[in-house]
Length: 237
Image: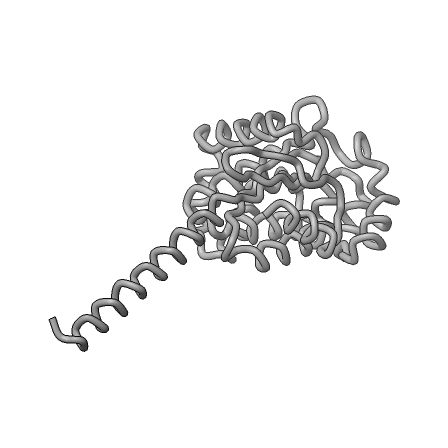
């Protein structure tokens, strides 16, 4: 074998080794996952949603992400704003001031003032499960749209027909989506999400956890700004 062939062989071996090493490093990093436990009805989750979106954008090439519905308003906790959520009339301003988000006029001046909106976490959890099944990569964006549906556009969580409209914004067929909203398969999936949130110890929302090497630990719960959240994540990588 002449020198030219030997040199070429060595170059190929070195390149292949580097490529495999990079691939292994990337796969090892991808074993890390952020689990975001939120609730579409949670005003503080609405406030945190821009930060969560920024975190996902920042880490998406290094870390896997999963969003789970927490079940803030289910069972006996379901009720209208007037019945169970009158505090929202003042609390939303605190969320705006703390998080820098803006509740929409349709919510503040119509829905909130009227007070008859029923706060029910089950319909949006069903909707999220439908989206996660077909388009998991769009689940975080859809979670943000669910916040917009209530807290910007002022639409009732129990308006099942509205969910297909918001899903269609991400390319999901509206008719197909709304049909699945009534399917027991996705209702059961939603309840499994609630159970999983409880198993994770997420009793308040938002809660962000990190899974690494098969172990899950809580990073923080409640509103956290981007810089602090990034620092907490970086310390665990």
